[in-house]
Length: 61
Image (tube, rainbow, N blue to C red; front, side, top):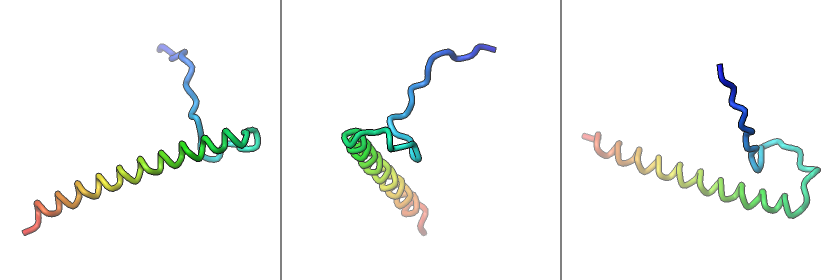
C-alpha cells in the first residue's frame, strides 16, 4: 500500500563490486573495514562455540 520512499544507504563495500573505479586509499580503507568485520565474525563464532560447549556440559550425564 505505502511505498518506502526513503533512499536506502548503500553498503560501504559489497563483495564482488567493481574495484577499478576505486583509488588505492579507498581500497586500503575497505581492507581495514573487511578485516574488522572478519574479527567481529570470528568473535561471534567463538561466542557461539562457548555457548554450545556450556550447553553440552549441562546435558552430559
